[in-house]
Image (cartoon, rainbow, N blue to C red; front, side, top):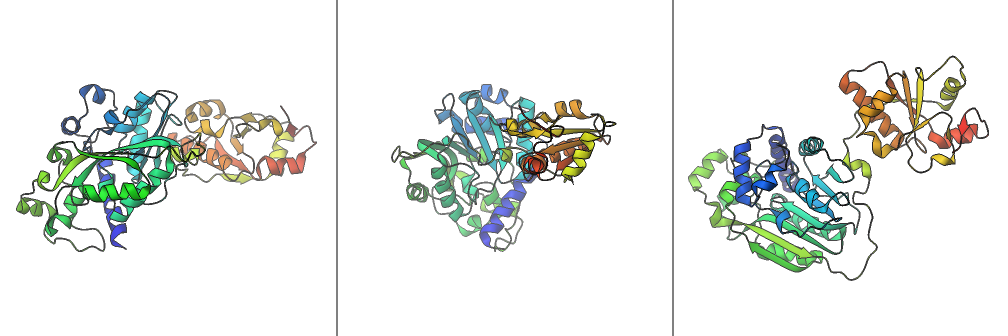
Length: 424
C-alpha cells in the first residue's frame, strides 16, 4: 500500500470510529463554540450533527443566498450541511460528501431526525481523492471544515481542481482549514496522532494559495482567524502510523506529552476563500449529484427476476388478485408510452423515502414485481430497497421481484395484446 493510500485509510478508520462513538454533547458544544458557532445555530441541529471536529464556521462567512446549490466536502455528521440548508431555503440544494461510509450513515440518520431528504439535502459516500460524483458547473458555493488538511498533498491539489470543475462560473469556495505557520519538526510531522487530529498534514499559506491558483481560482484570500486549535482538536485520536509509512515507535500520546506540543506554534485555523471566474461562460447543470441515487443507501438485497411469460401468466390467471401479486412501474415520465396493464406508477426517486407508505399499500401482495425501462437500474434498485425494508422489519409475507427485460422486453413481446398492455 502506498503512503498516500495508507494515510487515506487511516483517516477513514479514525473518523468512522468517531461516527460510532457516543456523542459528548458538552465537549462538542465547547469545541463548536470555540470554532465560531453560535448557540442559536447549535440549537437547530440534531444531536449527532455536531461532533466537535470543527476549526471554524464556514457557513457564517459564505454569504449563502436563497435557492443556491451548496457542496460540503467532508461533511461529517452534517453540521454545516444543515446550517447551510436553513439559509438556501426549500428551493436550494445542499450535498454533503464524506469518504467515511459510517459518517454518511450518521448524517443520513441526522437528516431523518431533522425531517429533511434528497434532493433538498443529500449525503453521498465519496472519496475526496477521486473525481467527485458532482456535475460540472452545478454548484454556487463549496464549504469544507477542517478536512483538506487530512488529505495527502497531491489530493489537496486534485480536490481543489475538482472544486473548480463543479463550481458554476462565478461560484466560490469558503473553507475553514488548518494551515501550517512554521516548519514542523520530524517528530510532529510523522506522528499519526497529530495527523488525524488535523495538525501535521497542514500545508503553508503559500502552498495552499499555489494549489488554488493552479486549479484556476482567483480572488484568493487566506485569513488567520485566531481560533483556538487546542480546543478544536479535541481529545487525541491515538495512531502510530499509516500502513507503509515509518513513524514514531513510541505511543502517540506519549509523543505528544514529550513534545509538549503547542498547536498554535505550528498551525492556525484559517478562512480560505476563492472564486471561479465568471468567464468563459459555461452551461450550468440543473442537478448537483451525477446520479440521484448517490444520495441514498446502497441496496443490500438482490431480488429474484421473473420472466415476462411468468408475469403474463399471473395477469391472465382469473384466480389471481392483488393479494397474490402487484406490478410496480418505477419510471417517472414515460409511463404513457405503454405499461404493464394494472401496474402502479411509483417513481424511483420517491421509493426509498416513502418505503413505509409503499409497504402499507403493497404488504398484502405475496409478490411485488418491479420494472423500469430495461430493468437494469432503477427497477432492481427499488426492488432491492423494498426487500431491504421488508427484511429490516422482519416481514416475510411479501417479497420483491424484478420483471426481467423491463417494459422494453414486455412491449417487444406483448405489444397489441390489450390484456397485458395499457396506455395513458
